[in-house]
Image (spheres, rainbow, N blue to C red):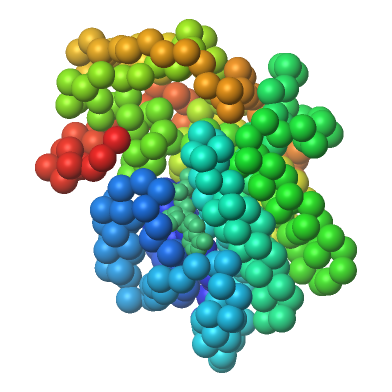
Length: 327
Ligand SMILES: NC(=O)c1ccc[n+]([C@@H]2O[C@H](COP(=O)([O-])OP(=O)(O)OC[C@H]3O[C@@H](n4cnc5c(N)ncnc54)[C@H](O)[C@@H]3O)[C@@H](O)[C@H]2O)c1
């Protein structure tokens, strides 16, 4: 019996990752505290979809609560060990981390510490941990390479993620667990996050709502389609030792370009409100994926126009309920 533990299963990437493992015949223990960082209806919808698989077990649980987490790990590992734990639970969003840093550190650092301790206790051989391109700070490099400076984050979110990377490195050196830290670059796709630009732009265009554009729109992001991220996660459970890898599309585009793609697909003009830039926002992100290609034999396969089209189609197919999701 193949088993895996996935935290943040009600989240955007957690949902898609859990679904892939369930489709591959795994028994999955999904953990999430279903917090209200964005409209919880979309998190509940994701869990409802996953519950269509009998091999899915869901526990509503906070990863900063080690005792409760321990009980669930013990129960799930009783007759056979899970192959890996994939930690996708996190307080996400750069801007909100300025308002409430404590919750970010409790989940992203203490939560990661709890997971690492339990991975060692239950002899789970692989731990995959989600990190972010935000650790590169406001880098001026054309490509963000793994040997770049990452000790100068410009948000609490980035600082919490960098802290988790460092603590996991120590854990991997002091134990037998294999740890892979994956730095994701702006992920988008169906059933996405209502607090992120692709979701907001598409829904605002459909609902004829005003879009707040922070800065001049020339900021570039290495938007990465969720299926590419999930295939990278899946491949990384085979790695040995400690590894950090970038998972990004390797082709950044500007926010203005994203807005123009949405207009092209919907054949309807966006309604824009221009606002000053935000201090936590970096100007540019771009993944150097050479090591990922080499170690995982991974390349992104969905370009931005294809990906946004697929995402838009999903929004149209789900228009009846998605139109009530708060953006
Ligand atoms: N989406 C992106 O563009 C992106 C980019 C870089 C990194 N990441 C990272 O990828 C991971 C997944 O991100 P996502 O986009 O799916 O975000 P998400 O917010 O949709 O998912 C995170 C999930 O974790 C859950 N969670 C938060 N705190 C928790 C806690 N204390 N205990 C249990 N569950 C908790 C939330 O309820 C949510 O369902 C995160 O670690 C995030 O930092 C995402």
